[in-house]
Length: 287
Image (tube, rainbow, N blue to C red; front, side):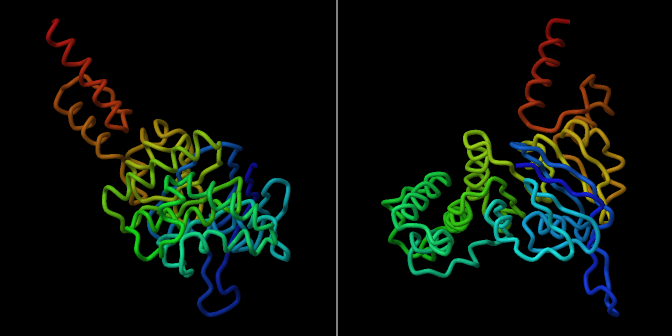
């Protein structure tokens, strides 16, 4: 299910005294099965951009096309788009409200008018996808769970709608390291096994470098850079001019190069750095 944006502009409070253009003339395409990382400084237009992908916002100008469905300024019935594109906001557990985990995840499918059997199947599958055992958590209050578990229940509620595209806006915000690892592990499984198209909005260069196939960099409401993690993080000077940085491991490799060590600087994960440094050290021993 591809996503395409053609000359998309969005202006808040158009014509009023506080008019502000958040994104301007954006053109981009996200392909089926891609894992895209979306980065940019605060106020760069990231959240405005992704809210166009499921029709929460409509363009002031331009067109968004989701699986051949057009979203334009005058578009009205966008229910189909919102079923196909699941959007997980920051702190999605704040939207949990039912008395049990099972009822909360079932809320969306029930509103689709599905049979009870289909609803039950979707709840079980969604919990399985986020790594929570149905029998152990279905009757528990969401508010009795850990922060990471609540976050996964909230994501399960989106997955129960069976979207083809999953947009995650800072999905690990506020979680401890263990909770972060749990969420990202399940996101990787969703992408690998279920072939979801995933858009991950994040401020963490490390997370995006480790997870994404392609990175889109927003700056001042426009797409400033796009490419593989290696291609994007090789442009460290440009990123810093935009108020961003490269992963810490890339900075380490740059510092080692400055110290005279012959190492590549297009390294952006710990695993890559370990492999490179091991080879360098082995080479020095045999020299």
